[in-house]
Length: 339
Length: 265
Image 1 (tube, rainbow over the protein chains, first blue to last red):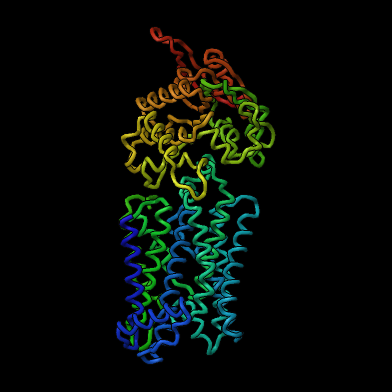
Image 2: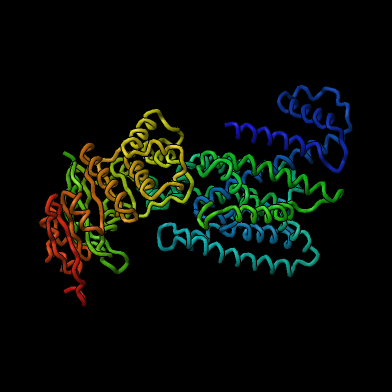
């Protein structure tokens, strides 16, 4: 419990820190006052008539730029971590990630389609989301054609369908012309275009999916023992796997459609937390959520701060930091099968 | 007394007939050993009984209740399984691993009740693993791990205990220890215990009755003396043996002499 208290405290600190930092220098006091004011107004609309001793541009930056970005980072980091945790448990494989079933390629295709065809901007998350889920659906149908939910076949089908959509994305890049840059930028993943709309798009499905996965945490533990033992202990393995796949896909698709393809968070955070709280998912899942949120906010803040006034896509930072860290984790493992 | 009745079970994998018309009854307090060469259907039979496999034909009855009509949860409340090679590769503690045996009794939101902990404690005590409770299961010896898996099965509060080659990875000391434990639990709890084994001597010593499978069919069923005859073993295992009784203990002993060349007739 001490661990959770410190993690929760850490998250609060990281959130506040991230809101205070930005290319436009605004005093910490002003940021906090603006935030408190907006929160109070939201709770009690009558307070809007109070005086506001700060510039309106600062208010817009804090309220409509920084806060949605931090909150979206929190949601996406949480989503990718819990989805990664779920996939690693389901596949009993520490190399599984939220994108194992080709979901990223599908989403990328949807986003690229929207950009290349110059569709209205709201279609980008919609198409990304739709194609992400379509990909998983195709993969699932291919793998389960002969009955049951065979995880190895699922893995291979994910690889095949993912490659197919990757090829389509390459084709889109090839014909994109001057829109090439915006597709590439989206593919790298980032939170630069965060606004409240995106927060509200992602909020409900991510919280719903996360809650659903929490409820199945004990079943996930039992699935780690393998199908035969899980069944002998009363788990309806096929139904539980199906449900978990659906929830993890929902959560991943919701994250990807508002932030692009941010790598490594969903792979690393579950590993890290397994070292800290052990293999049981009742602790592992919430711990991963907290740390995933924290890590993405931190890396995103770094992404904003490194080359001011511009920024680099956070996906590059997570990969740059994540890959060496992953190598370190691998070197810690004593045996091949140990997590 | 509790009864487990298996009636006319047949199971096919794709084109292979793994089990054909297997019928027998086992009662509470007895250990029924299932023997037979590799591929004779021992493990398949256990899986069909707890319905981790669905037999195409046949029924399994626990005291006249048809297992087909039970959910997986309800089956798990009646039957505990100690699978072959249950090696757990994740560092759950022994307590966590045994608590998993309470899964079929827990609601989706509920945590461990005091009753769950009480039953788990009892299971740990019976299997002499209480002192290991907070150790990670991955750090235990083979014999200790096997006792933990048995404790987990006991935590399911089963009427039927299924053990798939419970002694295959163990040294002779731990083999005896595990089988003594199974013997004691079966008697104290009135369990119906089915165990598969490749070791005819151990099976003869610890089982009340033996079921000999040959290519998915019941070849012989009866006391160890009735089943373990040189003629039966020659036919089913293709091995010439000498069956004797130990002079002072009276324990049945099967001594393999030579393998018989050629296919079964």
